[in-house]
Length: 349
Ligand code: GDP
Ligand code: ZN
Image 1 (spheres, rainbow, N blue to C red):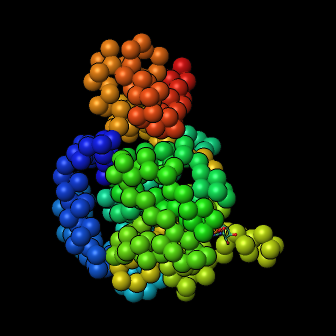
Image 2 (cartoon, rainbow, N blue to C red):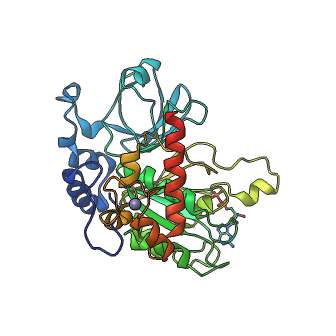
């Protein structure tokens, strides 16, 4: 997916090339009602790994949760517990993630992780050189936010959008708790960038149909700050789930809210990954170039900056900065950009 430049209908070049964009749109349409195994078939030509030649990809299982040495998978209508041999992570240069398509042997040992068509990842908070996958093979990542309680955190939204775009999924912003605050103007800037924004309330039920339509037949992940209502939304989308929400937590039942990602099958080909709430999101593998690509709304101004390699930070006669001053570009977005650029230059030193 790619963010649109402000005020223009044109799509910026995708991080993964045009083929991916095309395939993504087409496959998403085709997959509306597809089973996970059919989804793999639809994407078979992406799997050019010779190790997979002759493998029956339709027989792959879907990972629904992961613990250190085991994982739970969904396969052929059943849930199974599998062993994750340590060499798998080493051989495939990455740990198993929820949403992964895997092959397993008769002893229920995972034997291969199939190539991923998208990921959502972050650096390990303790070891920033290690990539941690939040989910794999998702079509849509819904960043759930609330504007009042907890308050809106635009910088976290900007970071999620970068991580989503870099990982190859399509972004969606879900503004929950609109029963408390109906003003969605702070989110308009994202709509202008081509990111769909859906307002909803699990208390009043408003907007839930629109949300249901947006995730129907797809694999989605719900991400966001804790307390915004991710668990409540999942329960509202499928009452059978009965996921513990913040209410239970506070009542001291001893049940913990989400601590690791889990994939839920809502039926009809709709899969949703519930992820732990986070306060901060580090960005994996960000460079000044990819950071600039993540703010396509600055591109048009950049052509008028005095220096053609203007970073829009300290240069004189910077059109981007002037447009921010004039209120033509979002100051909040610009501030995120500056912070991220500064973080990158600190890392280099
Ligand atoms: P999570 O941490 O993102 O999974 O959030 P939870 O689903 O646990 O919800 C956090 C708190 O927000 C709980 O007290 C919920 O009852 C409350 N909540 C969830 N959805 C809504 C909503 O639409 N409106 C209001 N007013 N409160 C909500
Ligand atoms: Zn500039």
